Image (tube, rainbow, N blue to C red; front, top):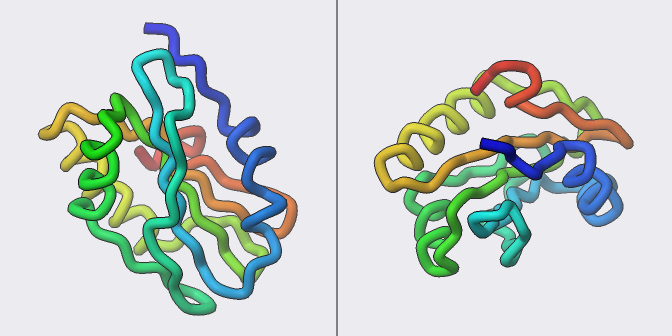
Length: 125
């Protein structure tokens, strides 16, 4: 299956709104069967170094919009786009829940100071 998705294009779309925020924001991008954006929504606003989100919140939104797949993204106000252990663990839980519900988690992108990390590209998922 050809996935018409590119992490750099998601970064380009969101770097201006997320790159300079002082608190972590977790965004969910909802996609249709052709990987076209249906909507995006803020799932949570955290602290300077933490954002809390559960699979329940992610998939409540995905099911509400009839999304076939989703992309998670959040910012690191520190400017360092490297994933934390918690980022990787939470992503894994969300991916597993998505498999059960039939909603694919395509990627989780962390935006830092004018840079990003794709957990899919780094093979964390």
